[in-house]
Image (cartoon, rainbow, N blue to C red):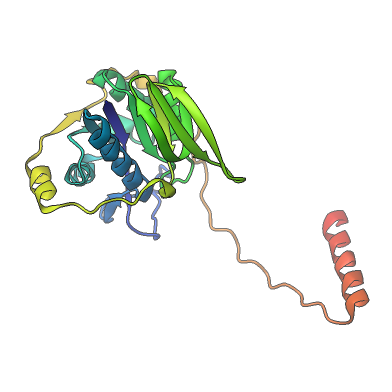
Length: 261
């Protein structure tokens, strides 16, 4: 079983700074970590490998410093790591990012299941996993909380919903995005840390994965941040006093004023 895990390095802070010229995150000088949801994807990939054999390849698109995240993934049990890095990728939205990752996966060629965290903590869109599925034209299951069965050519998973869960069967290859209920991520072992320190991280650029320049970076992004602003502080509300009938009448009048103006 050949497993690909897509991860992202995100700022380890809630104090996000924005470049006023490009309206993109400023990542330089900010401590970064593996996106928390991606740690569950890594763990699940390693567990599948332990059950079925094969290997886990971890992939990320990002600046050179994202190599640290890949080495951490190796320390957690991944076998190979690929960093896709190029200035041409700057400003990519989720669609351009998923295109870049799908081109990377096409270059890898041999894969059975692609695992992503359900969303990134610095974007919260939950769109990259489904985007990879769309670009590769393969099935997807999002919000997976359990893999019941996985074998050559077939998978059976539980998908978390607001009402409970769904059991979905699919052919392979397959893209899944996982939620934190799926497992408990392990800590890196000393042996894993030593292996990660000496591991070779492959580094590919846009030309290596044969990207169309019109599909990456800002050029390939159908969505863009046009304006960023801090909303004004909310005004204090009014406390309604009186008996029940008086409060209801006052509330009704206030609502009328809001709706009618």
